[in-house]
Image 1 (cartoon, one colour):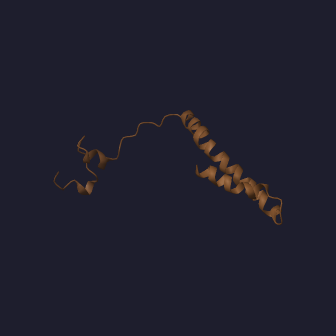
Image 2 (cartoon, rainbow, N blue to C red):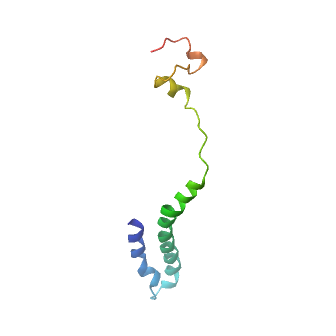
Image 3 (cartoon, one colour):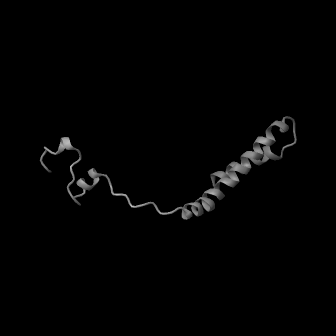
Length: 86
């Protein structure tokens, strides 16, 4: 909706023929084209490209996450091994 309203607002600048229009219409045309193309790319092309990417390899969470959720106790660093467990 934001892109559409911006494009509608720039249509007069893109089609004007009055004084000074020669300097405004190229920029307005490029902006209108980009604002119309961006949602199409975001909604259609980007999901297709993401679906083509291979799945990321499974990576173990950091040790501090594993220690805090109770899955297993892993020392955070050698200097913290002398502290009692909570």
